[in-house]
Length: 391
Image 1 (cartoon, rainbow, N blue to C red):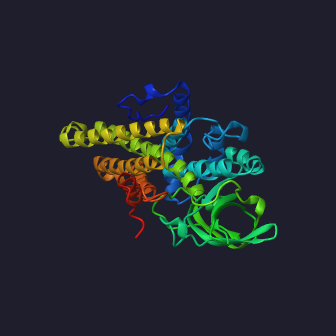
Image 2: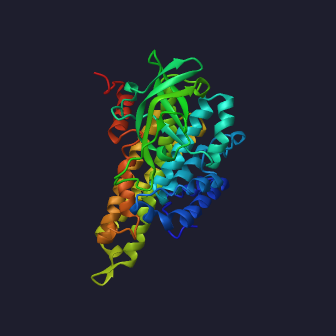
Image 3: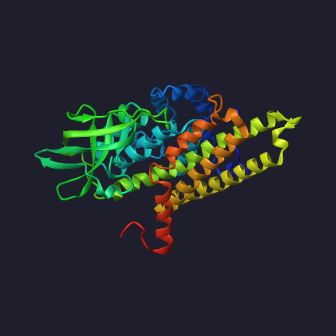
């Protein structure tokens, strides 16, 4: 169990099954032993601890909701959320790796792939033997993926793929990439591009102030010949990548709770131990105000994430609900982390504590897979029926 007592003010644990609790505790223990001791150095050195990926495969967090016949765990969406929560309590980069592998690589292959594709890729992705990445965002097209410029044309039994994707988690280390591109008619399809295909390169993105323990890069396609058998056969249009992003956004909403809980617990311990003016700073009204508001925000986020997890398992959740919790929970985590930094004072910027690292990571999380403002407009569209995206 964690040396930190993570908050559960409304007794969410009472709503969990014994299996959920076992899963959560197992991932928490692994994070405490394998991630927290090394993550500060990895971030300081701008290096990705890629050896952890196979450990995550052994732990069962890669493709946890994919059926066991394809190597996944066959768990429900609340179990997936709890896993993401615990991974991000360690670091957003670790959760991002698992999230991309599970929701953005394994999930589209499972949903939209042929049986041959599922058998070929999913078991090895589940163990971490293969690492995947997801190619949607482009240098000129982020929030408007329908304007993507990456294209492919037919060439006998293959297609020829040209274009590039940017800000891609796992790109420099990926063995395969699920890439979304347009054909000659403008129809969007998903293609599985393997490392080693001629013309496919993955330059790494350097000089990041955020997600420094994550391998981030580009996917560049220079007349890459992709066999037609690598095209996902059961999807066309933006519904494909959007479906996958909904799964990932749901996991992010849980992950943000983990980052916030880590910051809150560190701040609470520090406030009880730090003495000024003859007493612990936790005795001061302003410190108690900060802690009480932090706990309230975390508790609200927990309830929202749990309820959406229930709805997903009942197949009653909609993308707009997922947009709401992604936006709310990540913003909540940033607010909690910033208050924790205030409580820690100057120590809050030190690598001896995780708070500043969480803040910097969350500045990426609040932007990727749908920016803070875009998710707000999705909710606005849902409640008014008027789109703010079209002129």
